[in-house]
Length: 337
Ligand SMILES: C[S@@+](CC[C@H](N)C(=O)[O-])C[C@H]1O[C@@H](n2cnc3c(N)ncnc32)[C@H](O)[C@@H]1O
Image (spheres, rainbow, N blue to C red):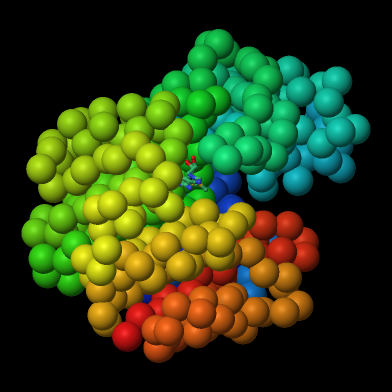
C-alpha cells in the first residue's frame, strides 16, 4: 500500500502537475482512479491534504533504480530518489556529502534503469552568481550538459552548465499562461532560455511576448527556441539588463510583467512598476521564511507600490515550491493601478 492524495477527477491533472513540480509526486507508482476521484501516489506529507492508502501498481522503470539505490545508499536512498530531476535526457542528482564516494555507482544505477536517460550529472553547487548557474560533475553516461526539453507543447534546447533552468516550475508556467488575456503585451523580465515566454505564447497566439535576459548564452538558446517553436514575430528575446532595457523600450506598455528571479526580484519591483501600464498585472516571485508566510511577500509588493506612488491591489499569493526546510518560494500576483 502507498500513500496518495485523493482529488476529484476534474482536478486530477492540475494536482498531478503541482505535485510533480514540487517533487512530491511518487512516480514510481501508477496513479489510480474510480468514478469520482483520482489517487496520486506521493512521497511525503502534502500541505492541506489528508492522505489515503491505496494499492497502486509500481512502474517497472523506477522500480529498478529505487531497489539498486537502497542497496548502494541505504538510509540515504529516499532523499536521493525524491530529489533528482530529469531535464530532457539528462538526470541531475544531488548526492549527499556522506555518499559522495559512491556518486558514480548511483548514477550508473539510474542510467541502467531508465533508457530515456543518456547522461547523469551531480550537483556541485547551488545556483550561483548573476546568471543563477549551477556547477556540475559528470557522473555517468555521455559527457554533455546540452539537452532538449518538452513542456506544455513547447520544445526547448538548453545547456544546464551555461543557463538557469528548472523543470519544477512547469506548473507555474502553465498557471501564468492560463491567465493571459486576448492581445496582451507580456513582458518577462529575467527570461532565461524563454520557458515562461514560450509557454505563454503557445497558449495565447494573439499575445505579444518580450523576454529580457542578461546571460548571452541564455539569449542564444532563447532565440533558437523561438525558431524551434515557430514563434518569430510573436516572441522577442532581448539581451540586456532589465534596469536599462525597460526605461528605453517598455515604459508603461505592459499588460503583464513576470519577475521570475526569486533571489532578488524585490530589488527590481520599481522597474516592473515602470513597465506595467495602469491596471497592469505583475507576478512577483520571492523567497520567504516559511514561518512568516505569504504575507511577508505581499508586504514587499505593497512597499514598492508606496515608493512608486502606485496603488497596489493584491490579487493573490501562493507557494510555488519548497526551497529548503525553512524557506519557500512564493508568487504574489498584483495589479498596479
Ligand atoms: C532564476 S533565473 C530564471 C530564468 C527563466 N525565467 C526560467 O524560469 O528558466 C533568472 C534569470 O535572470 C537573469 N538576470 C539576472 N539579473 C538580470 C537583470 N538585471 N536583467 C536581466 N536578466 C537578469 C539571469 O541571468 C537568469 O537567467
